[in-house]
Length: 270
Image (cartoon, rainbow, N blue to C red; front, top):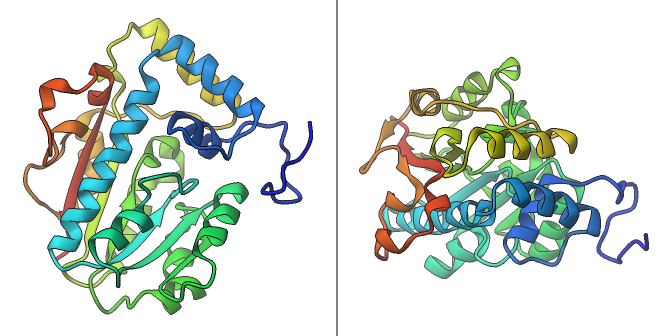
């Protein structure tokens, strides 16, 4: 397989990546055939899976615009993925040209492409880190140079928590992130909900196995389990709801059934 110019040296382009699989779902071009094959396998079990990922992105755009409307113009996007069309940086800048954005991911392709997109922008940055080590993210040089943590920041955990196993204590990681934020900061998150997927258990299990095979185990949590991530913040209306129902900008009845296969919510730090 020929290595494209945008692919960082040192990564194994024969191994699928969740970031690149999702880039494919969103119509991006920074993915390899191995990623596309894994995506096709997952879609074989859950035909509407790309619609869920697209609904996740649409929720993010609405939440970012709402945050700017609330006066929060600093964004820390953890698990940012590859910055395809409609990403946090693009949406925030469209709402406020002065917005500051830091993108964090553990995928080298996602980080490399983010740095290329943000090159020369003093009000934005990207680096590699892991959600499971929140203090490293908050104390990283890029974070402290781009963001003023004494002022409100919107932290995004979109489409990432269902990839963190309970053994890694993601609840503690999220709580530590919130503890490091100024009052008035926002926590914006989404999480897949297996019991809301409009497919049988066999389809869900098949898709889970595909992701497990690419070393990205999907973790099933109930709505109550997802809500626990927001225990340290005050939920804003309409609360933790299916993705299309969070402050919709169009008729929810027109949404694809798979768009409802996850929950989204925003909370404000005291």
